Structure formats: C-alpha cells, structure tokens
Image 1: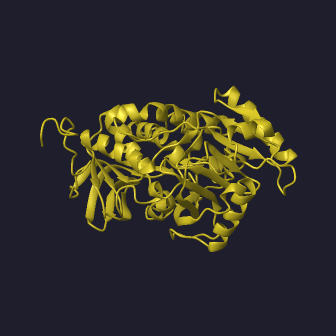
Image 2 (image 1 turned 30 degrees about the horizontal axis):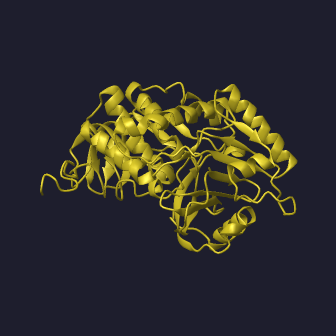
Image 3 (image 1 turned 135 degrees about the horizontal axis):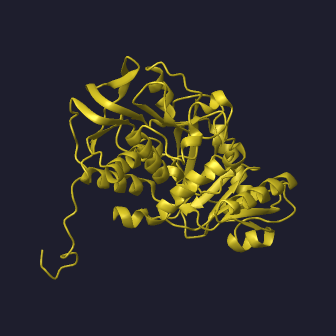
Length: 410
C-alpha cells in the first residue's frame, strides 16, 4: 500500500479479537457461559483481582445466546434500593466503558421513556420517580405534552383505548450495540490472559465433600478451583447436576426488527399497559419487544400470537409505523425468579457461585454484574451491591419484588 493511500496509517485489523483455545486440564476459575455476564466477570476477575488463569466455556459460540438475542436497552430506574444500587452502578460503568475497553460500543444515551395509561400507572410511576431521586438516579415525570416533546411520533391523543397520561423519563438511559459490547469485553479479557473455549457444553458439575472440583464437558473433564455459573436460562439445568434446585422458570422472550428506516424515533419508549417497547437501532431498524411467552421452554423461539399482540400494541402508540415491514424475529431463553430479581452469590456447594435469574434485564446490568460477581468469586463473599440478591432470601423472605419495574420485560 502506498504510504499516502487511504488507511495507510491504520494498524492491520487482527483476524481474531481473541484466540481459539483447547481446554487445559485445570483452571483457577471456570466460568460457564460466554455471554455478556460471563465475559464481564472474566474481564473484571483479571483486571480488578489479578486472576487470569480463567476459562470461559460456551456451548455454542461466544455471545451467541441471549447476548445476541436482546433489545439492548440500558436503564437504572428500578424501584427498590437494592435494584437501583446495582443497576445504577452498571450505568455508571457503561458511561466510561467504551474508553476503558478502547472499543466502539455505540453506547447512546438517548433516554428511556416509560408511559403511563391509567391513574394507577401514574401513581406507580410518580412513586418510582421519587424513589429514583432518593437513590441518586436521574428521573423525571412528564405530562402528555412533555412526552410528545421528547418523542414526537408517540400518539398522545385522548381518543384511544389506552391514552397516554404521562410518563417517566430517564435521560441517561439508552442503548448500546450488543455484539460490540461482547467483542470489546472478550478482547480486553483475552489481552489479560483469559481463555475462551467455544463449542464446549458443560454437562455436569463435579462435587466432592461439599466442594466443587471441576466440570464435565463435551470436550472432557476440566478441573477448577472455583466455578461461576453465568448460563442464563440454562443455569438451573447446570446447577441441578450439583444437587441445587433453583427457584427459576425459563421462558422464551421474543423480539423483532423492522426494515431499515430513516431516523424517526429519537428515544426508547416502553409501555406496560399496551405491552411493547420500541427503539431505533443505529442502522435504522425499529427494535421491538414485549413480554415473555407464558410457556416454559428452552427453545430460542416463541409463539406467533405474542408477535401479533406486540405489533398491535406498537401501532396504538405509533400509528406512523403502520406501513413498516418486519425484517426478522428471534427469541432468547430468560430465567425468571419469583420476585423478578436476580440470584447472585454463594451456593451450598463451596466454590460454586450463581449469577442467574436476571429474567429480561440482564443486558443493561452487564458491566455492573461483571464487577460485583468477580468480587464475589475472588473473595468468596458477596459484593455489597449483590449481597441482597443471595439465594437464601427465598428462605428468609427478604425478597426484592421488582415485578412493577420489570413488567414490560426491560
């Protein structure tokens, strides 16, 4: 290439951001699941705690599960102190993560708008705004005209089935490019010595005298000093091989994108009453999601009637989308706990750690989860931010009920 040709001064792009690795006989830490949470945990184990003899095992390909099957919404406006704490920690990490990883995550703080359609919606929403403010989380209550100013294409006419009576708005919320997040975390962790082993399904946990000693995989037995489970909807399946019965149910969660459109949708809009959430991706697709399929399943697809209801809801809020075409649909497998909050911490088996039950809120928590779960694994004790989400809360009754703030699936 001529030294004056375009791109002559750019470094050669690597063939891979991380190396394909054959599994070693043993590791200090084995992480099950190479989605966002597994990658972030591996990165912060190496960066914050100097633990680099780490293998991240993935039954498919890196970030090919829920990390590639979500709608990329990021927010921290949860109701309870415990939830606001960990999600706000994650949001603050998001705000510096692109620079830290030196990788373009396309993090866009375009704001998240949650609509209210009934007097009870209004009461609940205002309550959440005030709770957010007490926790230092940015939150505003908007009347219908202010909703229209934030997102001009929302239908705020009073002559509809579910009129918009107002909404909460978190200006710092937004979206990021999910695959870029995975690649950035994987590249940074690999540079610190972490190994990634793809196409390596964990089929069982080895436990001796109450302590985990390793994992059985489709590529052989791997010994481990500690094992961290980050397998989302399949975590309960893996944990059961160690005799742990988790209070989780797995469901498909569907989403879809439209054809490419000109920029028309400036923020993220969510509605519990009509049950849809909509944003516009960087390339121009409308990204839409709704609630989980009611049936328990481990399939990455769901029922067609969920998509039909989702489209009807979207057209109530955005009549301008009536002529848009659906480009593709997909589904993830989400793990839902009884109180709609995660399970994160120690288990009755020494050296075995849980990070699961995130339901539909896992992506937005990615860096915060990695930070806190790495602390938990490294120190064999919970970080203060994930201590309230221990497994034993289902025995003590100290639940963190976030059904209201998580009801629309994000």
